[in-house]
Every structure is written in structure tokens, then in C-alpha cells.
Length: 111
Image (cartoon, rainbow, N blue to C red; front, side, top):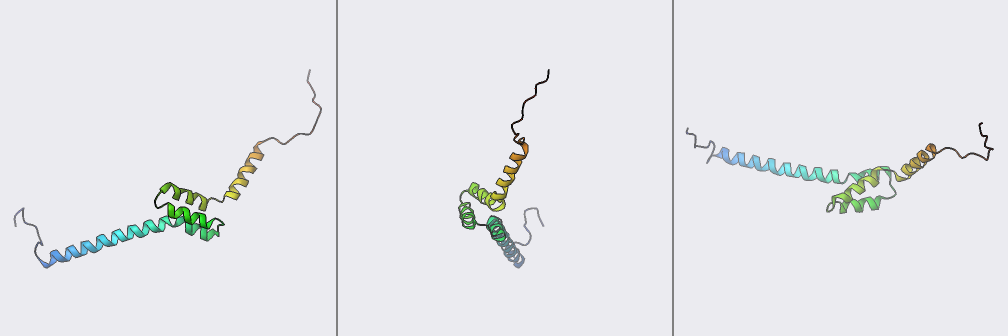
């Protein structure tokens, strides 16, 4: 056997190895496509599980997200963040930091 000879060339093993390689390649490409699809549909599944009231908006943003990926990010934000609770939490945080209103009390000056 010389350095220039290639093993299995022109034999049945060569054909078998090519068929196995083709099957593995096709299976890998299919797995990547299915994984991408499942990951891309994540906002829709989350909206269904939460019974979200903006389900049609999330679905539309997810489909548009196939072309413009930043739109898909908006779909994820809308699906995972409950805006009503977030606004209420922000309002309560804002009110908590501000001092309570004081009634009209006479000012006493120190001397």
C-alpha cells in the first residue's frame, strides 16, 4: 500500500460509506431545521400556555420574524412579559420612592 492509494475506493464498502454519510448529513440538516422551527415558535407556544390576550399579534410577529429577526424579539417580549403586571409594578415602585403627601402643617422655624 502506497501513500497515494485510498482505501475502500471502488469497492462495495465505498458505496456503503457514501450512503451512510448522505443519510447522516440529511438527518443533521433536518434536525437543525426542526430545531430552528421549534425555537422560532416558542413565543406562540408560550402565549397559548398563558392564554394570552394578544395571541394573534404574537403569531403575526413570529411569522414576520422569519424575515426580520428583530420583530421576532418583539414577539418574545410580548409573549413572556405581562405588560399589565409590569406597569402596575412600575407604578407601585414609583409611588414607593416618592414621599407621602403632607397635610398643611405650620412650619416651625428654629432660632
